[in-house]
Length: 120
Image (cartoon, rainbow, N blue to C red; front, side, top):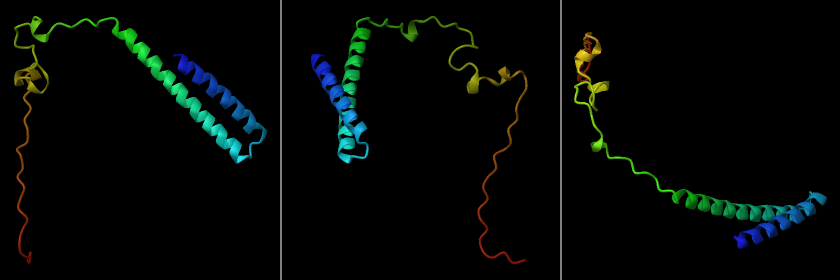
């Protein structure tokens, strides 16, 4: 962590110096390039700091073990016909649609394209 702290202090000092240099002469391409480099270095250090923060959060979270949920087969399932994975939805029996039977149209077959000339 001391390495990150040192890098953060140096990068922020360099960035501030580059900013003040650029602020005095905004049209100078070299000052602008140095400021871009300083900002880039500051971003790298802040990214490293963010990674360290995430790692420490992960270590804290894993110190508390998660409870293991019971297996699905150990749960008691009611024995009626209206429950279970096939109850309702597309797998429901036709009686569950409220007594209304829905008729579907017969499937149409494709006709073969007519060959030859069509002269009438």
